[in-house]
Length: 199
Image 1 (cartoon, rainbow, N blue to C red):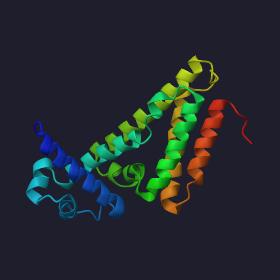
Image 2: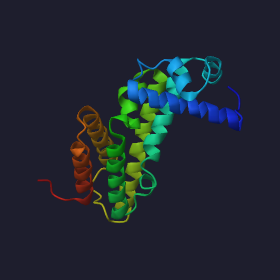
Image 3: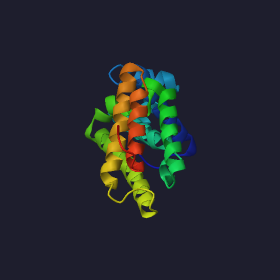
Image 4: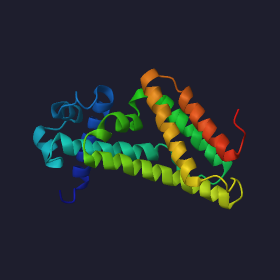
């Protein structure tokens, strides 16, 4: 597809957002192009104009949209983890966001729905996790350079554990409605960075 006009971009975005919302509520298997068209107020010809490959192309676009939302929801803190205040503000922002979104969160949609639909969507999910881990790693490394985090902590492994802890907490939240696992994972992650002894 060539360069879209402003109106075309807005229409395409409306379709993607409608598809994402429907998938969050009903799942991929129960989402048809007719549902997306009705929800986005677009006809079948418009859908295929923006997504020539039909549902498969649309799911890739939804994966990209949801992956970006996961990162955007953590800003401005994720991109500036250079003080303990910033780290704790990031922790609170993550918990608050997932508490509000509950089972309809973008990360959950990626992990349990669209992120497994095709090689392209799986690569988008992998890219999200790489970028997320890298931003946490940079935060840890920057704090180490300033002497606030012990140099013995492996920044890459710590960042990987942080991302894994959040993912696990979100999956449990989606299954049970209980956010305490996510809170515990983040608190223990920060305790580790602080160098606090574990009970």
